Length: 551
Image (cartoon, rainbow, N blue to C red; front, side, top):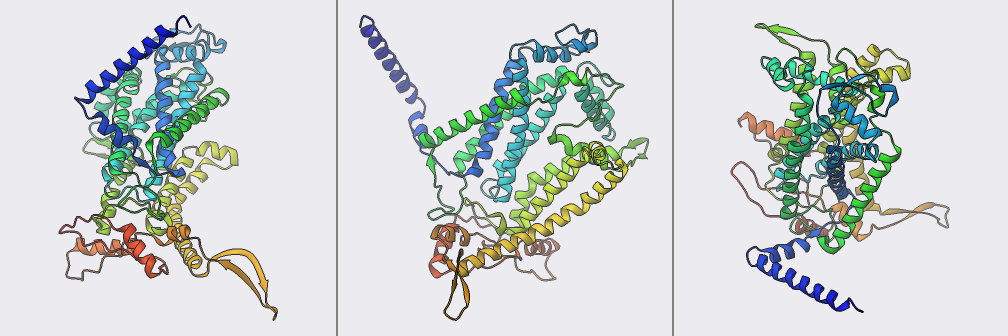
């Protein structure tokens, strides 16, 4: 009672100050208008859209745990004799970087928990980012007007790989040192300039003394800054361009149906962040990862047994192991094809394809329209088959990165396993493409059967004459809408033999992409719904024909 009036006066003063500050700022910046538009922005509700949020919140965990670790890590390659808490390594000569990593793990309160949370969050971040990109690819969410956002996402993925490799290499243990030695070999394989780049990056001959400090600056400053900036641009484009949504009654290319950001989406997203943080904490507490004390400090003439990189760079290791030992000498320069092709050309080609694929598919389609409704992967069998073939290609390379461990486990020779994986690298993606395309067409045929015959009820009826028939019921309106509403481009017409080569190639690719399909039986009313849902703003150009959509 004694302190109630002063507290009320203080609360009133705080409110008045906050209100006057808001009025002053709002008079000089469009805060009210921006907040009103942002907080009422519709965000579609579907589980597949959570993949991007998981990546975002894993990055937040990385930033929080990484900020804690920077206070104790020493990014120096100066050597000293270890006399810390971990007994088996006492008396060994090691770098300050490795010694500080041991101190974080065994002497700093909560250090091992934070360090393992950081590592797990890095793996989850890159995994969620990769699966999110697959979702965008298979649902066609990279198409106009989101080509720029797709490029931003690919850049984020590339930077996350570099960031992960940099953090993986900082402890200067025997495992990460082996990875850096491989990286040095990759740099040296670049023709003409490889030796100069290696000398510049390592500050002299390998292993040098300045790489860890340079990696530390990149890992804690430059790359995180770029990640945060690109992530802000990515989210800004998502808000500006509208989020995609799955086909359903009332949803079309001209609207965005979902829950407002505040309060529904904000509450759900906050809960997801707490769940991600809890899972990272649980993994950091009970699941050991990267036990650097078991590997020992890095020594240039030693290599750890069963050396396997983290999964996101494992495909490069596998490519190096599968590549035959080809080298050649041209004009006094040695071309190490066994390193250059798998470790330089292959990733460069991979990211080039990722960057240019939206442009390529748009050129093949001749489609100038905006697309805000997600594609069902089965309705685009060629695109889906290409994506699955790429996944199989990556999986074979990832398995090849551990061919020594697999050979030991299954008691086969490494040479035999290597040849098996080489054959699988060529045959596997082709088989995956053919099987996936046939499966997509079979699923389309199943959808047509559901539309024509209805959904099975599991009830069998016997007539008075002894005939057995199975009862079925028509599809629900929402499910029928989900099946029939699809935006399929028709193949471009053949331009004739007298047309330029690029036109004939474009028509051939368009036929290869969109010739195979299963037509769906639709009513007149459904045809109007399909037209309304797939209609969008058209910006014709001289090179592109009007968009032809299957009805």
